Image (cartoon, helix red, strand yellow):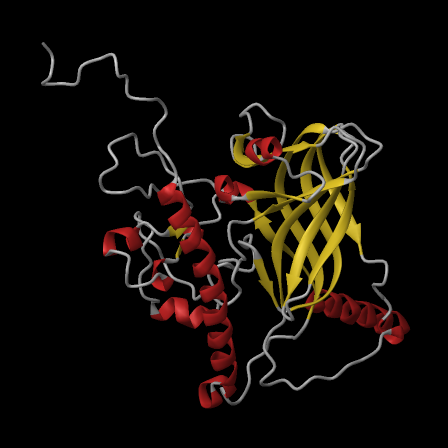
Length: 362
């Protein structure tokens, strides 16, 4: 009898642990390859894929009336790896380093002894100063990943359709995972305390440090030190929360109203590479596969007798307001970049004054 009680208690502990603790992939770069082509109608070159269909965003909706419908159709960007940016701090920001520090999709050989052989991961080149100064570089997405963008399907031109009833019923947003067992695209919701963070990266024997940057519901950005990249080959670097309390009896129990408190979330904001003044500068090369988190659930999802949100609509109104704010900030930045790109020179060489033009030959 006593033995059965002990086994029952152990079972309850295991059930409780599985109900709260959860592992999720917050971003997987092998899913962010280009698979659709978005080009101007007059473009007559080879239209190779240049955007990621799953994460494409249309910022033409925030453009002014001075733009034509054709111009607005081209105002699209996505989380395609090639669209990510390298942001250098003031000590590292030179004209040469700004031009050469880039992010590319890096194909992994089919013969590689890793589960993601044959796929593409994120490849990063950063040019650090050679002088004795501390320097760092952030690898950030082309836009702040929105947490409240409605889930919808895009076509091969990057245009999103209206939400279907099934997409609405799922309750998921665009950059969340499609299911509990698949990777997310930058946003994980219902996150309480983060217990651990893991990053799969390839070291190239650089002595630089690696940080993972995450934001939360309150707009607070935090960086987590993953370790140094002074190793060769693929490795999973891990950060463990030193303040995580595993014993329930020693935790401070906080009770929150079940409704209308929205689900807290974390979003991926990028990486940071730090170079110490004592180390050699110049080129840094790095590769990144994914970032995972282990966390406590903020709330236990369960069926309720009354559909609170259908009745009051409080959370929907709050999330809609946040979504509009996120989209306006995103659109303003991207429209300004579109204007700057339109003003850039495309000519690669001068027209020769020594050759007669067509129709004027003597």
